[in-house]
Length: 317
Image 1 (cartoon, rainbow, N blue to C red):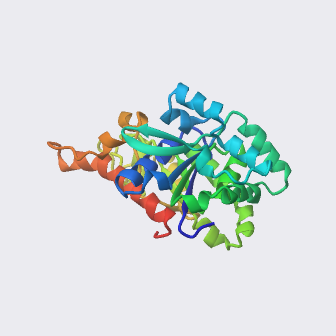
Image 2: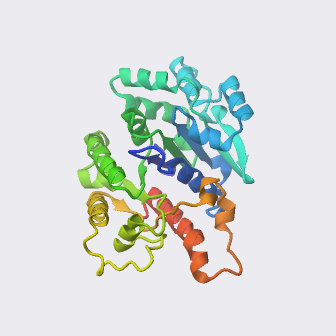
Image 3: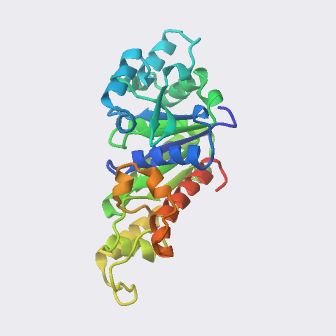
């Protein structure tokens, strides 16, 4: 893998945690704020349901990608046939979203079959990484963002772990999500030896991100009590006056347990309509006429969170 190419994979133990949205926001932020050339940035959709691709393409454009064979499935099949003269860029679909140019490698309709074939080789991760290497992915691009399917099917997460060098673990502020995430991390630990890494060095590749937090809830209070930023407390909340709330205490304990295993960003994105609609530019605007607190709430939290992910992906944090 090229030492200059930064590859970050977004993974999650649960579905519906906003993982795909964060991957899209990071891509737009890299182009708009870090001035990464769209031609040097690739988004790889490693989800058989094509959630990321369908978020950025209309149906006609996506169907056209399938017709042209511009998919990860076609890339894999062509390389299996020995067609090594084609580069990964030949399979990529350029899109424009909110005026931002992005390049996507959609999964294709038969990704499940390809994953099954990879698994049957006995070394699916190295085989998948080798396909990306031979296709020129790590030399043609400066930054690759991989959006993986949730851990319901461990195979997609494992493939994304092998293809990337840094991983962003996304979860909601709930006891179930934090417990699922802990179990996922334990299962992924067995792959550390394949990278020749010690346990601490392997775990340093993971960054936890808490997403979809709702202000004015017990969950928000727990996050604030753990020094996370980005949500507002229940009115009148005081941890010293309300020390016996079992649900809050259990959530704090669960998240704190995760923080002993992997690093976390201190910034939390709230439930927000602009985020759900992928309105990145609206969020990134400096809002005139608003109070400093209002400006900070979403604009600065989003900016700081994406910067944390950038620093993690580029091994600066």
